[in-house]
Image (cartoon, rainbow, N blue to C red; front, side, top):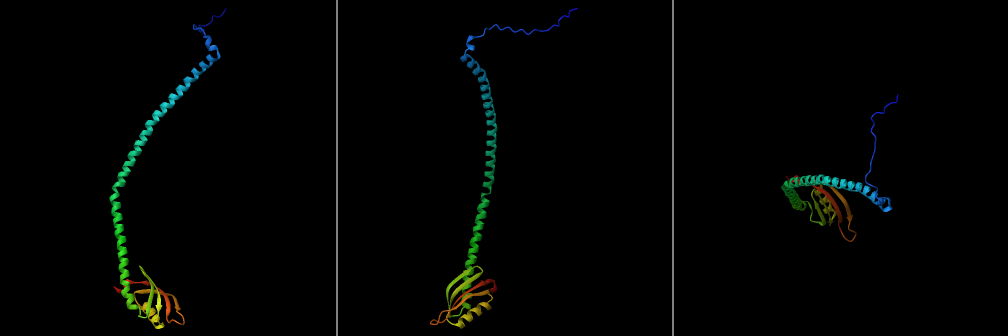
Length: 190
């Protein structure tokens, strides 16, 4: 017995719109292609615009957070402004005190030098620094030079006395040129 076909659907398509002869031309085919590709280009452009629009919100939020963070840090730095002013003021006072102390030490050394230097000694240069003294000059006799060196060596105010140079002034001129360096201990008088 012949088999009955099962209820099968038949795919039948009916196109009631006739094909436009314009689409068969070269310009018609180009226009059809441009319209189909143009849709994708428009969709892609819209996606780019939407992504940039959404990213704009994200970037605006980041800028706002950054600005608020900067404002907070500026306020913290401004709050330390008085501390910095006070610190610089105190630092300047310390420097002024050290300068004054150094100048007072310079003044204190002159009576000590006057007591230890014989009359026959003439200074050419005298360089006084905090903690040290260096002087060059001329002793008119060997006795004056000996008294100078002995006074400096025995004085509690001068430590580590070193004689850098002793030279005769020549046959025609009497005396000796000298260069002496020493550390100063001004606390020895206290």
